[in-house]
Image (tube, rainbow, N blue to C red):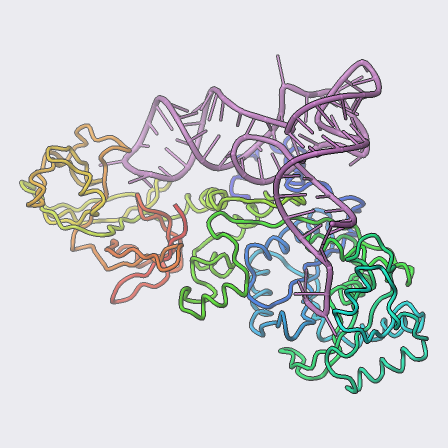
Length: 504
RNA sequence: GCUCCGGUGGUGUAGCCCGGCCAAUCAUACGGGACUCUCGAUCCCGUGACCCGGGUUCAAAUCCCGGCCGGAGCACCA
């Protein structure tokens, strides 16, 4: 991000104001934001590992708190042990990926561990007769909601309500028998707002708190209380939660609290992935279509990490999406461009010959050592052995026509001979009119070759071939396989190299 | 069906609250050229947008109304 700071040093002070402006303009201004007083949160349900979508939540909230020098809180909204059941490992994954994304929370909250806190507040509401236990079935209540009629339980007295509440807690009711509803307005013009559920009975084991509770708050209740307690000033979340504000405001009014400023963004569709829900991914992993949650073909942050993406590139990409309420359909090409900017300068270059074909160079005067730059921008060299027997990729070979002049990059220039015999004729050590983009190809002698498989970014996609041995020293790094793509060397061993496709 | 929200170049985005400095920003993509012994990078140059129709106004991408299109919610999910 700041690698070019030196360049700007001379212009220095004069530029500072500009840079500041540009930095802030990564995101539009936040309404009512006072420097040092902004508190924001990212509130995931850890029912799978973070994806690009969740990362957006982390990064945008984090970026704003950084701009305004505020506080960032991660809160796990994990109050449904059944339908959207949290995954135990995913709590850790979220924290790890957040750290990797340079999102450093000031606090981490687990809603499931604070359930007694929510009990206290609903009790107050019950006392105030602003909430009531409702024995209607879903279907029954839906009728009331749709027709705007109050249900018979609505005017239960505080005393009775509290009694039912205690019985709920002690397990005297079955699931579905009774819920606690918040009184809003059964005539509210938007049916979605009418007397919503704050607590329900779920007799199911919770990954984090086991069977300690059987009465769980809904997201709307839990997050309403938490946002106030945590002193959240600004909420940015998906527009699927847009109604939450109107629902939760009733509670805020009953208690005389001030509701945070909210902003909502639309759905993100990534061209390359289509729509993939967490549950859909889980299914496909189980069926073997994907290797696991970090399969390079998946839009999880773990997968992008495995592919060698830079956190900063992902941040920039996500920030470029802004916070508009419209749905966006964006191509990963933008992410690639962002990452390439960072990775191009430091990635070592290597020859990777996929779908290799062995060809012979006739008339090669001598075998030579070929030295080439590891990276066009520095002087570090790598060495290859130019032999008369070499490997080129089938893609190139098929393109060649007899008589073509071809430059074997760094080695020599040849003329394509009899294609059936796979022969090349040595022409010169010099370039001999070879032009970039035309006929300069990469190659490899057996001497330098080691088996290499590149795991692709689509399900089941793999390339097999040979890579130059020099690459074994770059395990864990992103390198560029020339004329192929940027790849991360994942494993290098006796039997070869495994690399992960990063991007073109 | 009911409620709410949004529509700026191919894509994403800034600007819209507080009309004029917007013949509209930036990025990416695309086209052309230069350079480099990578189909990568770099450097030039270029194409390209305010959904439509009315209204208010000296002046509208910005305000108002209508239409069209798109999206979200209407769960004892998050």
